[in-house]
Amino acid sequence: MKAPDFTLTAGPTPASERTLNALGSQIVYHLDPSFIETFRRTTEKAAAFFHTKNDMLLLQGEGILGLEGAARSLTRPGMHVLNLVQGIYGKGMGQWLESYGAVLHEIEVAYNDAVDPAEVDAYLTAHPEIELVTIVHSETPSGTITDCSKIGPIAHKHGALTLVDALSSIGGVEFEPDEWQLDVCVSGGQKCLGGPVGVTMVSVSPAAWERMLSNDSAPRYSYISLIDWKVSWLENGTFPFTPSVTDVVGLEAALDAMLDEGIEHSIARHARAASVTRAGIRAMGLKLWPTSDAISGNPITAVRVPDGILHTDLSAHIRERYSVMLSTGQSAGNLIHIGHMGPTATGMHQIVALAALGAGLTDLGATVDLGAGIEAAMRVLGATAS
Ligand SMILES: *Cc1c(COP(=O)(O)O)cnc(C)c1O
Image (cartoon, rainbow, N blue to C red; front, side, top):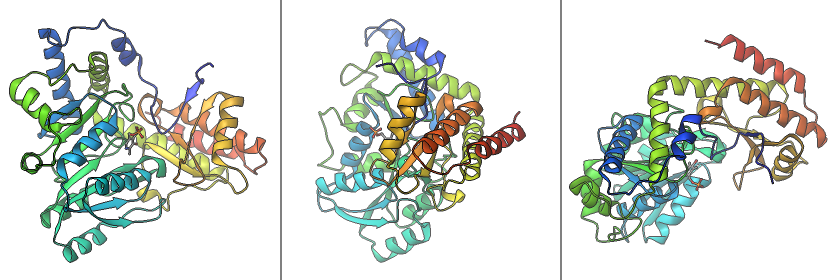
């Protein structure tokens, strides 16, 4: 089966030509001094992308590896953890934490809403035994943002560390981990960066290292160990095992593209793509999934699928008839996503997505004003052209 003409999903997202070219370069022996240099440069660029002075690790696997490694390293049996849930990634983190023996506390809101930082403050006041707060910054399937700028300082005030899933946020929305006092942050290549899927970037604060190193339950001598990477790479400049050479080279190219563009510019580009998309959805007469624009993320627009139509049928129909791949709500709800991450967070990509979505819904019997949607989206696009 042929790949679709357009991939506009919750990620993985298409990569730039620069990244694709780098992914085609020759495979180098991992202990060759040139690769060690590449690895060091890429680590520095990842730290620049995160805007952090904390230690940066490049873990050799998809984002889940970084999240699982970080969560396990910070958790021990009997430890009290507050997990914030506004979607399926938050929910999944809670299941991990419980499986490691943590005493799980959760603040859970509807999957189209956002956790209120004041509620986190009140909860931590009532539960001083909590040592860690886990947060999903951009809850991708829900299309919502959690306010880490407020929750980070609140957690610290109460003596708790923070673990942040920033997979789909960095490069698409503002992210200031040092200013926001975030301890461990995890991101990946395949979302707003438009890079390869196989590497996770993890930043670790000194306080988080201290916690991990004093934790007997933290994985050591393991593929998911963060401590192994600290000892091998940060302290001795070598690797605990062979890194995914090709993915690292691809990641560097994607980071180069991002840093050359400028992170602020990239965020503005994602914000513009989101406002074009939202204008189109509203004018078509459809409903956005998040309860307000204030909690909606720039990387993705989640749209309610009209009653009587199933999100998975809609996505399959659009893929088949129009060769456009849009992602579904998974278990977050009967919703469909227009992803605008990485190189596709530019004008006409969103128009393609809106056209395919509007036509697909019409085909399946919904009442949609496709023309008004495209016109409204084009007007926002034109008005914000630079
Ligand atoms: C993409 C993503 C991940 C990575 O997980 P996969 O399910 O393997 O794609 C983790 N967290 C968030 C919020 C993501 O968007």
